[in-house]
Image (cartoon, rainbow, N blue to C red; front, side):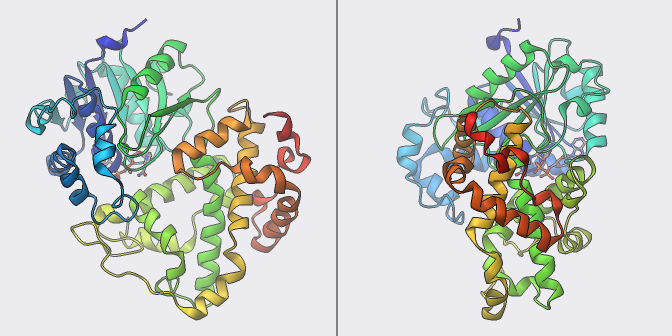
Length: 425
Ligand code: NAD
């Protein structure tokens, strides 16, 4: 069994939103060497600068506050308290300075060089299956034989990703639920069909050690692989509905600019990356249900290069300092038009149904665990908390919704309709 204390070198493939975020927590965990690998030295330089700023920001509560000033979700946190209880292995608490931490960061454009002495590799490249399969083929060739090889995929089968790796027993899923891993508590560990118990145990231990600003890190191990894992899987069918809704409004003459009432969803999509959501929907369309086909408005955004905040434009235009340049106003006519569709209950029912599918597939054994995962990932109550008392009403609602939208995937599953989930507490 690999000893967790012998894991010294971590390599991260992809230095984008997630690669940079994972590099930050790997550096703060105290690994001796953290190597970020990406296609060009320009991308790597951008990632290095971001990391420098993000690590410096943790030196004091004042710096933290300044750093998060334009982040609506985080700007009001009590950073002093958060930093005091920061569960890193003490690297910040022990006043190890940013320079020392940054000296452990290496960058590389060639995978063969970047992973040659890695003990743990985490892949965080664009969400495209063939691309990931190609990366894992190289990891199988160039990493030391004992290395654990993880993918941060949001949606895909680890078995498919590991197909050409020649070492599928070493390959696992290690999915950080939010686009800012230092503030998100949830990490999901997933097996592929051939992942060894040892790889999963080590992956779990490594994940559990990553520091988290929001509180104690929460890592869940899935019983079996499932496209979209738990948290994303539960929220993805909402995207079917959301895409339908935006296209429906567009078809009725309302432009994206008039749909300011959907601003929260637009903002999150811009932060996650429109291309990432699009790629996930395409994968789901192919492997789960054709109803996941990305909406027309989303296709337009992709075609015009509006990939989200990371490129400065998505649903919104973004300023350099991370603020929004063109906030949308709420158009009264559009609001009236959408009102009958914007009921919280619809969103909750869709998520509840999908949570029942997660149970039905045997991904976890109890619905309480699903509720815990959702709470740790989103800070909102889990789907069963309200769903268990409302499922009969929601069953009717979902049949109606499936008919109205023409999306049969939104129909209630057997586990929901029959109430069988109640036996899997
Ligand atoms: P991103 O577009 O910000 O970054 C992807 C990076 O991969 C880019 O820098 C790109 O240059 C690099 N890349 C592409 N091909 C490469 C190659 N052959 N070799 C090396 N680097 C290559 O995307 P992201 O948001 O960081 O997402 C990365 C992965 O993490 C995806 O699998 C995504 O589904 C997953 N994920 C994303 C989020 C999120 O909120 N954005 C959350 C959890 C997981």
